[in-house]
Length: 378
Image (cartoon, rainbow, N blue to C red; front, top):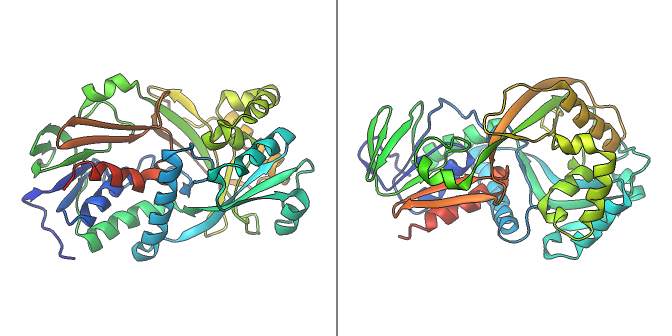
């Protein structure tokens, strides 16, 4: 495809080069629109790289979010080979150590969301994954719907591919300051565009701040770690009872109330800090482990040892072996809302605002980017 020069007027300008911005740029380029992306950072630095890269389908909120996750997973799988992005892991294992968790998984299998899922007994689970050693393991929901990429590698490679193969222009170290369509004033001068998509992540005080104020958005801070290679491969990304109680696709089912009540009694401290367990394995064998959730308008940037200890305690209980040595720690923040998973706003006919307010951008971003761009019509 012909490379566009970084001048003139664009058919679509996207503000923000996280996963949502890249998804919108992809959707625009597929329509043959002259597309550009403006981002204030020199490289990806926000929520889109500070996560698991776990494209989660099972457990997404029933309805549109679950459907978006399926489409997004398929898009990741389609683009990954072309963009040089490795799919480092496939599938998910939701381990259940309490009968209340098993009841939730059994109810889940009766829904349309269970496509590609099966329930394994404890003996079969241990045969498939001998290192899985918790004495109280009851069952495992095995899903083949998920894939995982290494976010800190995948997002830059996706952007590079969009520029190289799809002709998308990127303006890095460039802040969008004001909008008077078709003109968008930036810190590097004015650009012109027929359509605008603003993907601000957790920055609610920039463009169209007045439109975002009624949504009462806040920030969610999470803590994550990377552990040394345990010396064996996990069969899939591993989650636990705490995750089953947290993920909307499970948690909204009737039997989940009993599981939540038991966890509230046994794991009050974990729930207070929003701790649940995801253990994902990278290509080098290291384990990405998390996470926690704390909600504030401006979270502090510091990682707390006691919260990491709660995450590692759940690791030990759910997998039945001692966590390997921690070799890296980090925090991240993403946008959050108490009453919705996604914000899509039309501040003017040729402009859209797109925010995922539930931490599921990697899992639903491509579908949402397509929906928002399609809303402009031809």
